[in-house]
Length: 145
Image (cartoon, rainbow, N blue to C red; front, side, top):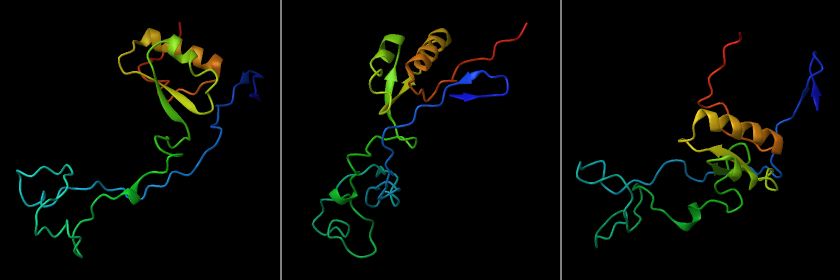
Protein backbone atom coordinates (compact mmCIF):
# COMPACT_ATOMS: atom_id res chain seq x y z
CA UNK A 1 0.00 0.00 0.00
CA UNK A 2 1.11 3.53 -0.78
CA UNK A 3 0.01 6.44 1.40
CA UNK A 4 -0.49 9.96 0.09
CA UNK A 5 -0.35 13.17 2.14
CA UNK A 6 -3.94 12.72 3.27
CA UNK A 7 -3.01 9.21 4.53
CA UNK A 8 -5.60 7.61 2.23
CA UNK A 9 -4.46 4.09 1.24
CA UNK A 10 -4.07 3.55 -2.53
CA UNK A 11 -3.92 0.12 -4.11
CA UNK A 12 -1.05 -0.64 -6.45
CA UNK A 13 -1.97 -1.75 -9.97
CA UNK A 14 -1.73 -5.51 -10.39
CA UNK A 15 1.34 -6.57 -12.39
CA UNK A 16 1.57 -9.60 -14.71
CA UNK A 17 3.10 -12.77 -13.29
CA UNK A 18 5.68 -13.01 -16.09
CA UNK A 19 6.32 -10.20 -18.54
CA UNK A 20 8.03 -11.52 -21.65
CA UNK A 21 9.37 -9.32 -24.42
CA UNK A 22 7.07 -9.43 -27.42
CA UNK A 23 9.17 -9.95 -30.59
CA UNK A 24 7.64 -9.05 -33.95
CA UNK A 25 9.56 -10.65 -36.81
CA UNK A 26 7.71 -8.70 -39.50
CA UNK A 27 5.73 -5.53 -38.87
CA UNK A 28 4.36 -4.98 -42.38
CA UNK A 29 1.56 -7.08 -43.84
CA UNK A 30 2.10 -9.49 -46.72
CA UNK A 31 0.57 -7.94 -49.84
CA UNK A 32 -0.77 -9.88 -52.81
CA UNK A 33 1.53 -10.01 -55.82
CA UNK A 34 0.83 -7.17 -58.33
CA UNK A 35 -1.88 -5.66 -56.12
CA UNK A 36 -0.07 -2.32 -56.50
CA UNK A 37 -0.34 -2.54 -60.31
CA UNK A 38 -4.03 -3.34 -60.74
CA UNK A 39 -7.11 -1.93 -58.99
CA UNK A 40 -8.96 -5.22 -59.52
CA UNK A 41 -6.33 -7.16 -57.51
CA UNK A 42 -7.09 -6.77 -53.80
CA UNK A 43 -4.05 -6.35 -51.49
CA UNK A 44 -5.19 -9.16 -49.14
CA UNK A 45 -2.77 -12.09 -49.33
CA UNK A 46 -3.29 -14.90 -51.84
CA UNK A 47 -0.60 -17.44 -52.70
CA UNK A 48 0.74 -17.00 -56.25
CA UNK A 49 0.07 -20.13 -58.33
CA UNK A 50 1.26 -19.18 -61.83
CA UNK A 51 3.78 -21.38 -63.65
CA UNK A 52 6.13 -18.45 -64.39
CA UNK A 53 5.43 -16.31 -61.33
CA UNK A 54 8.51 -14.47 -60.02
CA UNK A 55 7.20 -14.28 -56.46
CA UNK A 56 6.30 -17.97 -56.28
CA UNK A 57 9.79 -18.87 -57.56
CA UNK A 58 11.30 -16.53 -54.91
CA UNK A 59 13.35 -14.34 -57.22
CA UNK A 60 15.56 -11.63 -55.80
CA UNK A 61 13.92 -8.19 -55.47
CA UNK A 62 10.36 -9.55 -55.21
CA UNK A 63 8.21 -9.23 -52.09
CA UNK A 64 8.53 -11.98 -49.47
CA UNK A 65 5.91 -14.71 -49.07
CA UNK A 66 4.56 -15.88 -45.69
CA UNK A 67 6.54 -18.73 -44.14
CA UNK A 68 6.28 -20.63 -40.87
CA UNK A 69 9.40 -18.81 -39.64
CA UNK A 70 7.44 -15.55 -39.37
CA UNK A 71 5.19 -17.15 -36.72
CA UNK A 72 4.78 -15.66 -33.27
CA UNK A 73 6.19 -17.22 -30.10
CA UNK A 74 3.35 -19.21 -28.51
CA UNK A 75 4.18 -17.83 -25.07
CA UNK A 76 3.77 -14.20 -26.18
CA UNK A 77 0.92 -14.70 -28.68
CA UNK A 78 -2.12 -12.45 -27.98
CA UNK A 79 -0.13 -10.67 -25.25
CA UNK A 80 -0.76 -6.95 -24.78
CA UNK A 81 2.16 -4.54 -24.29
CA UNK A 82 1.35 -4.44 -20.56
CA UNK A 83 2.06 -8.20 -20.29
CA UNK A 84 -1.55 -9.39 -19.87
CA UNK A 85 -3.92 -11.22 -22.21
CA UNK A 86 -7.37 -9.74 -22.91
CA UNK A 87 -10.61 -11.21 -21.57
CA UNK A 88 -13.89 -9.67 -22.76
CA UNK A 89 -16.30 -8.84 -19.95
CA UNK A 90 -19.98 -7.97 -20.45
CA UNK A 91 -21.22 -8.11 -16.83
CA UNK A 92 -20.03 -8.48 -13.23
CA UNK A 93 -20.47 -12.28 -13.32
CA UNK A 94 -17.94 -12.55 -16.18
CA UNK A 95 -15.45 -10.70 -13.99
CA UNK A 96 -15.62 -13.43 -11.32
CA UNK A 97 -13.95 -15.83 -13.80
CA UNK A 98 -10.74 -13.79 -13.52
CA UNK A 99 -10.52 -14.14 -9.74
CA UNK A 100 -7.69 -16.72 -9.81
CA UNK A 101 -6.22 -15.52 -13.15
CA UNK A 102 -5.76 -11.83 -12.34
CA UNK A 103 -1.98 -11.99 -12.93
CA UNK A 104 -2.36 -13.53 -16.41
CA UNK A 105 -5.51 -11.92 -17.86
CA UNK A 106 -6.88 -8.40 -17.75
CA UNK A 107 -10.52 -7.50 -18.31
CA UNK A 108 -11.76 -5.47 -21.24
CA UNK A 109 -15.32 -4.20 -20.99
CA UNK A 110 -17.37 -4.90 -24.14
CA UNK A 111 -18.27 -1.90 -26.28
CA UNK A 112 -22.04 -2.27 -25.86
CA UNK A 113 -22.10 -2.15 -22.04
CA UNK A 114 -23.93 0.83 -20.51
CA UNK A 115 -22.23 3.43 -18.31
CA UNK A 116 -24.17 2.21 -15.27
CA UNK A 117 -22.99 -1.39 -15.68
CA UNK A 118 -19.47 -0.21 -16.49
CA UNK A 119 -19.26 1.56 -13.16
CA UNK A 120 -20.31 -1.62 -11.32
CA UNK A 121 -17.78 -3.71 -13.27
CA UNK A 122 -14.92 -1.30 -12.52
CA UNK A 123 -15.78 -1.23 -8.81
CA UNK A 124 -15.89 -5.03 -8.60
CA UNK A 125 -12.63 -5.31 -10.56
CA UNK A 126 -10.96 -3.09 -8.00
CA UNK A 127 -12.17 -5.38 -5.21
CA UNK A 128 -10.93 -8.50 -7.04
CA UNK A 129 -7.64 -6.78 -7.94
CA UNK A 130 -8.23 -7.29 -11.68
CA UNK A 131 -6.81 -4.81 -14.17
CA UNK A 132 -9.33 -3.27 -16.61
CA UNK A 133 -7.89 -1.94 -19.88
CA UNK A 134 -10.74 0.47 -20.71
CA UNK A 135 -11.83 1.37 -17.17
CA UNK A 136 -12.49 5.06 -17.81
CA UNK A 137 -14.36 4.68 -21.12
CA UNK A 138 -17.90 6.11 -21.24
CA UNK A 139 -17.60 7.41 -17.67
CA UNK A 140 -18.44 11.09 -17.38
CA UNK A 141 -17.16 13.05 -14.40
CA UNK A 142 -19.99 13.75 -11.96
CA UNK A 143 -20.53 17.36 -11.02
CA UNK A 144 -19.65 18.22 -7.41
CA UNK A 145 -22.58 19.87 -5.65
